Amino acid sequence: MVLAGTWNKIKSRELGMINEVADGIYSIDVEMWTPEYTSVYLVVGDRIALIETGLSTSSDKILEGIRYLGFRYEDIDFIIVTHIHLDHAGGAGVVARELPSAKIVVHKDGAKHLIDPSRLVLSAAKALGELSQAYGLDKIVPITESRVEPVDEGDIIDLGYRKLDVFWTPGHAPHHICLYDDRSNGIFTGDAVGIYYPHEDMLKPTTPPPDFDAEVAIETIDRLKKVKAEVLFFSHFGPNRDVTRVLESGTKEINRWEKETWQLLKEQDIAYAVGKLTAELNEELPSCPRWINEQLAPMMVSGYLSYFKRKGLLE
Image (cartoon, rainbow, N blue to C red; front, top):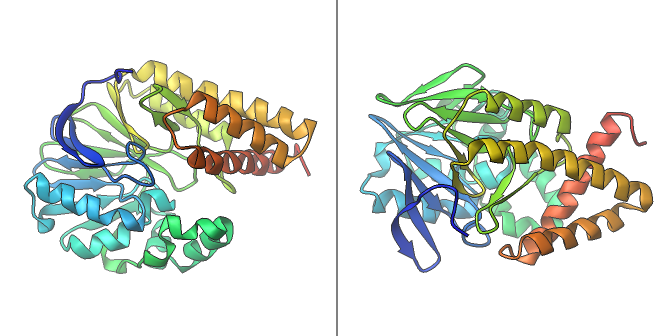
């Protein structure tokens, strides 16, 4: 299937690629678990920002991409993470060690976890169990407090002839931000809208416990609609220029999965709901390795379960 946006392929590697996805914006596939699943972006103005860092095991791909594009490590002025979940910020400390001039930008409520990631690592280890190694927990390192720059709604990251506006976009996580680039008229969505699967041209919600809030996530998407952007830059995965349709899909999928999960939990138990959603994902997303879908489905069910309990719908 042809993507809903034109990619200018710069470099094909054995397992991945670097693409110019808009004027001065480069996507680097960090090949997290599988190709074409996790993007980080290099945004070039008079100053340069790296958006997202992937897992702690993603640094080699990022650094390789920076070098390939002709930049020195000291040329990078900002490392920005949309939120502190491991697949977006787990590599922040590792990458920061190699990019000595960069300030690390994160929502104010997530800053403490980059400075001291011990609680984050501990809670992730308990939740992930045997999957901890796949998430690179043993390689996560702290970032010196003086290098961390907390931001909030309305802040602007000045790259010279282009600027990134910070939007506070909770729902997926309470410390989530999106970034609007005025030069491309594009939004870096993180996980606020969902996971985009380019081969199927399909969007799926990502609903991690304990903080996922379906109602707030939909409010966030409604707010992003008002920006009238021309392109969405997904962390999972890549750009999409069919903005109106994709944002509408984000809302519909959150509502659909909420209703379906609620019904499955009423019929039987969590294991039953997970099994049903896993089978649905495997059928709808043949390009995605089954073990990823098998990991995603329990997270989605657990996220909705936490949400239902907070709403007083379940004990």
